[in-house]
Structures are given as structure tokens and as C-alpha cells.
Image 1 (tube, rainbow, N blue to C red):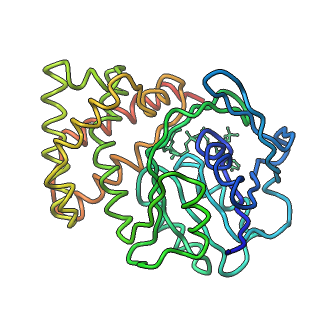
Image 2: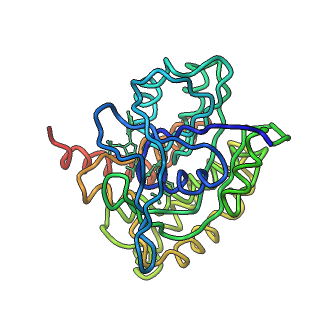
Length: 301
Ligand SMILES: NC(=O)c1ccc[n+]([C@@H]2O[C@H](COP(=O)([O-])OP(=O)(O)OC[C@H]3O[C@@H](n4cnc5c(N)ncnc54)[C@H](OP(=O)(O)O)[C@@H]3O)[C@@H](O)[C@H]2O)c1
């Protein structure tokens, strides 16, 4: 068995969810901001009871080496968070980015060229109830990989055992793009109209907006070589809307809480890709601008 020790940077909803799963199969440590309170445990709310799970915590500022790092911050925090542990990474360390959206992996690879950067995406979910306190929100599939790497990394066996189901994906970029495309259709619209996902299938005006967003995103997907997304986006987006009808999207929750959103890494990345191919995507552009405006209003200094 491959002996690994995972450090998880970003001890929020997803970080604690993955810490809970991984700690049963491999050594796992949570990395916190200096000074954050910790009792070397997390609390997980189940159907009827809360479970306290011992997990060692370490401040980012400490010096012990990190060989395997799972990053689970919000997209806009990844670079600062990585910077805060850069002194602990040794040449050849593994970094897994489990962050919504796209565009970060390229930047992290360029900056941390001596490390190996993988990407991951999950349909599992969790809510953060408080500091190191979560409520899992449903099982889901996790996909992990590095574009074109056919063989799973040696540490992947522990992930396969810990996370059910967990798949090695040698075309992870297509998986990330597909999720991004679906997100560009659902997240900004629900955030702007302050509605749950199901409303997108119920209100005719929103149905029409979803359809035209899918047309634009399909054209961009096609130009960028993501054929499966180009061909299936509308039906896939409609299926996700049906399956998550009562959900309030993370972008809606961020806007309502006055937090920044991940729009730059979702619609922002779609629009950058559109620009590269000279495609105009007026509906996505309008949504992007509207979300940026409402972020500015809510995140006044
Ligand atoms: N929640 C879900 O169900 C879900 C599902 C799929 C994908 N995702 C994606 O997973 C990512 C994480 O989401 P989340 O919901 O888990 O967010 P979250 O609950 O806000 O957790 C992010 C954590 O990162 C920490 N953090 C930020 N900067 C840090 C730094 N410099 N050093 C140490 N810790 C730092 C935050 O601490 P502070 O509070 O101190 O800032 C927070 O604990 C996002 O990209 C999200 O879109 C989430």
C-alpha cells in the first residue's frame, strides 16, 4: 500500500467532508489559518446525531513538510492559501485542486512547476454549520485526474477506498468543462433572480433564458473541442435542474450572504474561451456583468 499523508487546505464544507472520508483510510491533517481555533477534531451532523471525528490540525505557518496537499478553498482564495503553505512543499509534492470552475490549474502549474498538480470535481455536497462543523448534503461521484495521465497516481487507491464512488479520469478537463458549462447556465441565473434551481424549469421566461444560455455555451464548447458538452448541454442542464429542483445554488447563497462569488472562474472562464475563438456570447456576458454589479453592491468595504 502506498503510504500517504494528506494535508487539506480549506477546512470548510468540502474540506471537512473529504477529511472525514480520507482519515479512515490514510493519514489526514487539516491546515488552518494561523490562530484559528481547533481541538484536533471536526463535528459531522448526521440524520439523528452529531459525530465528533478526531483529525489533527496544523496551522499553515508551521514548518512540517507537506507531500500531498488537497486544496478545498473557494476558487478566489486558492492562490493566497497555496502561498501560505509554499514553504512546506518539497520538490515533487502532489497538489490536488478540488475547486469549482476552471483557469486555476494552469496558473498554479506555472507558479509551482516543481510540483505535480491534479484536478478534482465532485457532485457530493456539504453545508458548513460553523467552524469545523458540517452537515453532509448527499453522496456523489468524485473524479480526479491530470489531463492525459492514463495511469492513476499511486495515492489514488486510498481515495478509491475512501470515497464512494471515486473515478480516475484521464480527460479531467472535459469533466471540469462539462460541470462548468452546466454551472454557467444555473448558478448566475438563480443568483440574479434569487430563486431555487427548480424555478428555471417552471417560469417560461427563465426556461427561454436557460435555452439561449445553453445555445451560446454549446457553440463555445464546440469551438473549444468539448464535443460531448456541445451536443448534450441543454438536456444535461435540464436534468440537473430537475434533480436539484429544491436546491439553492452556491452562487445564490454567496450573493445573499454578501460573499464574493466564483463567477470569474465559471462564466468568466467561459467568456475568456469565447474570446479566444471570436465568439460573442451576449447572454452570458450580460449575466456576468449583472453578477459583478451585485457583488460590488453587497461587498462594499
Ligand atoms: N459545499 C459544497 O457542497 C460544494 C460541492 C461541490 C463543490 N464545491 C466547491 O468546493 C470549493 C470549496 O467550497 P466550500 O463550500 O467547501 O467552501 P467553504 O465552506 O467556504 O470553505 C472554504 C474554506 O477555505 C478556508 N480558507 C480560505 N482561505 C484560506 C487560507 N488562506 N488558509 C486556510 N484556509 C483558508 C476558509 O476559511 P475562512 O472561513 O477562514 O475563510 C474555509 O474554511 C468551492 O470551489 C466550491 O464551489 C462545494
